[in-house]
Image (cartoon, rainbow, N blue to C red; front, side, top):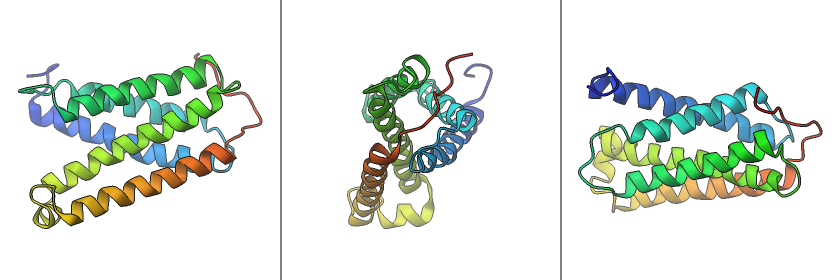
Length: 168
């Protein structure tokens, strides 16, 4: 039992948080392309994505490896995004720090989702059982290119008119 949950229940909770983070993050990044801040959706994105990274550390691990490294990086990046948005309210260079960190946090969540899909979904696993095959590399390269393009566009276009909300 982990926090009163079985590993199966923790896994379900972790996956739900991750999917909520991905969906809300896509909405937030698309809003950035229109120079909009969506306070509620942004809060959902940042909170669920942070919770995804934190709950990842609750699973039993044999050794500190790549999943844990991605989790630590994600937590640091999300902390920067929250600091930029809620403390510095996107002033000056904090606007760019927010855009880059928010897009990067979403990318990392999707990156891990692709890894999990190739490990757990039979169709994808059959295409790349060791994740060293071309379909896995192509999928991850495509995700990286999409997020690089989104990040560049958001960095250029995200100049919201109003001030973002501070912590309540």
